[in-house]
Length: 158
Image (tube, rainbow, N blue to C red; front, side, top):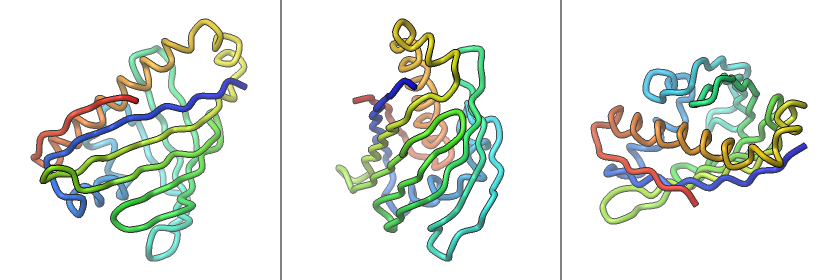
């Protein structure tokens, strides 16, 4: 398997309390996040969202889709969401929100490994292309979130 640690920063001209619902209402992501093809909630979780499970299907600029499940393993409103992924990708995704110059800085870390044999075989050569594809999806997320909230949002990667 090939391991990846992908860091993204979004700067959103809205307070964390406005950004939080957009990130936690995963079922709404296809409405505003280009590249999110489908979301199916598998488990409701508790009242805070802990234990929520989703199956999501994604497509970036490259001609393939990825489907995987996530389970919310840690949640601290309105600053932290951590989920464990399994399926075509395995690993941990962590959203961190903090006030930033009148808006919100959203840091996302996606520490995953690929499970698809073809992706693992191509990883030594295609790693930069897979990273570029991930960055495209995250850029679409920032742009879509900005439209969804009616607040400018900028993308950056780390």
